[in-house]
Amino acid sequence: MDDRRREDFAKAFNVLANQGPREQRPPRCEPRVRPVNGIVRPPVMPPPNRKGRVTNFLLKLKTAVNAMLRHPSSLHFRQPVDAVNLKIGNYHEKIAYPMDLNTIKKRFENTYYWGGADVLEDILLIFDNCRTYNSPDSPVFKAAVTLCEIFWLRMAKMQRELHNECKAEAKTRCPRKAAIPKPSTLPKTPRQAKASIPVKIKVENKDEPQLKTDDPLPSFEAVPNLHPKQFTPVTPARRGRGRPPGPRSLTRADAGRNAIISQAFPAHHGQRPPNFLKNYGTRVKVEPLPVEPVLDRLRLKAILKPFDLKIERTYGQTLVKALRCRVDSWPFNNSSLWMHFGQNPNYDFHDEPLDWNILEKMLAGEQFKSWDWLLIKLHRMLENAMSCFIECPSVRNATLRTFESFVELMRDYEERMAHVKATAHEEVRLKFDAMTPSEKEELLK
Image 1 (cartoon, rainbow, N blue to C red):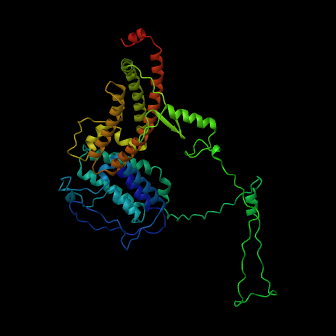
Image 2: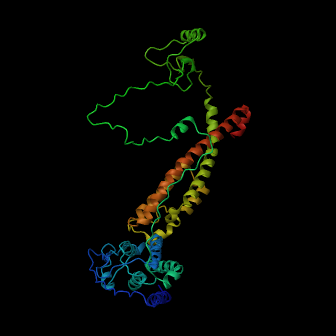
Image 3: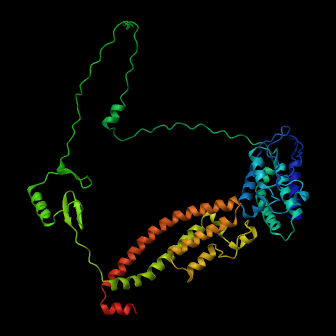
């Protein structure tokens, strides 16, 4: 962060301090927290003598902090600095008040801040700590400069809230009105007409004699059904094709035909006969398909192989483009950046680096072998991200969501590819069968 951005922070503090006669900001005094196992965790609950509140500027700053957390440049500033794992024992000697973005987010959730100036102080503290400990040529310092620019791009859209900070009113949800059914213009069915008959309510008359508790209850007799429903029985001859097999009324011609079929093809005791289909008690002989010569099948397979490779290449390129257009595909845009932001010291960055650009070049060149080869490469790329970023939740969550999209698209693309292959194979086979032996020999040369 340069001096120009420090002046921008100072101007913002000046604007918040000179907003006219309003509620005075209480003093902010936070004690220094000692590190535990190399980590300092600042308090996230508001002190009893300084309760937080919700303002319009704080709500805008909350969205800006969430945007900073989602950006890849915030990798070093999301969690508190672990001086033990990073092997920087003098960090807490130089930095008295560490701060990170997740602590700011938790303070937002617990209504820790009284106003926007508190948030600006914590964000400025992150950049000052980075500037104090890291050299300008280090990747952490460069990431802080990028993150600072992202924050001020958001601040440029908050000028109205910055110059007029006030308490935010709680939003009350209006009760949902019950939907009034519109009258239908269609004629009512007999059932609807019967349901819409108003029920007569009997009004009690004091002049009529009341039933005493000692009197026996009247007996209720069953009212006979004057209009019973007429059910039309379905005869066996009217059964449809989808009904299960069962007893059927056969004519003499059907019985004679079944007897002839049974004599011609006797049943095997205990086993189902081969090349037979059971069709509601009637056995039908299935003629075996003609078998092509072995030589022709081998020749046809050699002809179809380049067709299959071309179809798989086309669908592979479409799959990579579809995955690259997803929101969560950003970790795989440039694998050379993993060398600067990777968290696993044992990860070999030169062992088959993979990203979207590398995959597209391999698909367009001679390195592409088959559809299964592409699936293995995609799976290897996702595994590389999980093994390189072992403590980065944003990269790991994006990788898992990319894997879910990959599995979903893979099934759909395989079904489409199988259909296209079957159509192409049938067309090629028909043209191959129509050729003469000399044309086939000339084609295979």
